[in-house]
Length: 357
Image 1 (cartoon, one colour):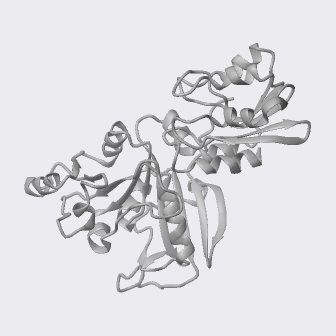
Image 2 (image 1 turned 30 degrees about the horizontal axis):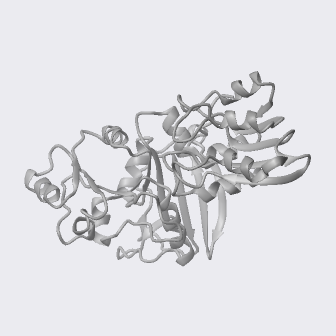
Image 3 (image 1 turned 180 degrees about the horizontal axis):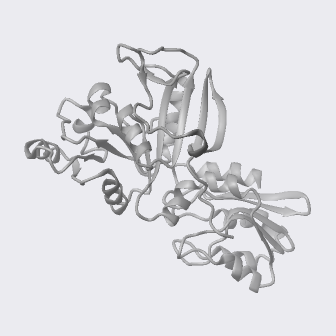
């Protein structure tokens, strides 16, 4: 199963809105074939693994990170191929909560195939958190917040300089992250101050360029900002407020920017979900990140910690986060810890999106 999870990552940036899935075919203790979902609309991981196994599938065990699908979408049901291949046993990490695809385990059981669900379930749920979360919470996207801070939790020095707190390995990882999200978001002040491109320029070319979203209440972006200049080339949206000046909105829309004017953040995310955004990576700044955290709208935190101290005069990463008594403070789930060059990446989930077995 650990190997199947490793294989599943190879579909990052290429399979959304479908899930990441990896599969391994075993004969006894020997691995005879592997597969992964590599491209949206292409063969599923189970089909690729079974095809690679050729005539060694009869009596085999299929290990897969997600319950095999039971419906005919862009490809035939995986359960049909599993039955035809003579697989004896299927081990899945988690059930598929999708209303159309789920039910494969029951079909396999009725066909006399031994099944098991739950092996490395937490790891598989974390890997596919955006897919699972948007099936379990349908009113908004899966929201991840990415922050690069000093070791004392500052996102900029006393003069406001933030480039670069993190090193090249961390910045390369951010481009990899961007490729797997439907949208990348920043606050209006960050967009005006840093003039970012918000594109994925790493080793993975996303199947669809992430939508660039700016949370800018007054719709203050202008033609001097790269995001507006390139809005007709890469989808660019602004989330403003109903009070945003009409003239500002007209300038943006006239340059190809789509403008939303919700009453509140929760309504904004509901509108983004209806517009097709399943997963959103927010890259700051501090005020936007804090507001998202305070309103319980962050599902995952990607926290890059650089080994540098900026002191009390530095810009805090979490200004104004509500206080909690220790006994009542929410404890997040550690998904990953690892070095990125001299920096450290800490990935935390607010909760575990684990479908019922």
